[in-house]
Length: 108
Image (tube, rainbow, N blue to C red; front, side, top):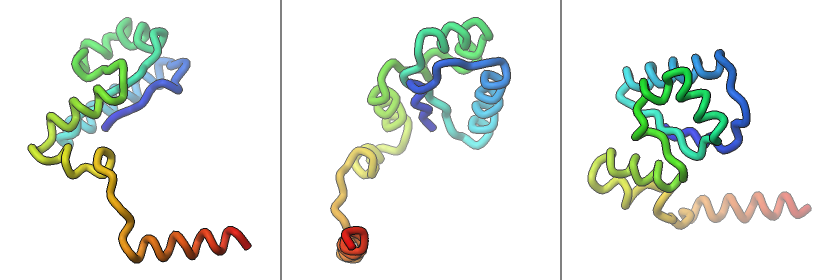
């Protein structure tokens, strides 16, 4: 799971504790928590509380793309080639029909 933290401007003790608990729960389910684009003031707090050390610095990324690249490397071999977030996939015939119908309805 990747959290894009760019929009987080402040974090208090409750927020830090929630992240810590989320990380523990995800780890117990075999899921890694990754954090991308956290601002300096947020990183300073997370470092001061020991959260960065507990989670590991390798799971924090300056760019979202770096977090995605890390995640794709950790997943199965062909996941990066088939992930809908990385590979553009055309609409199915049914999806195209539904889209046209929705657009026509919205234009009324």
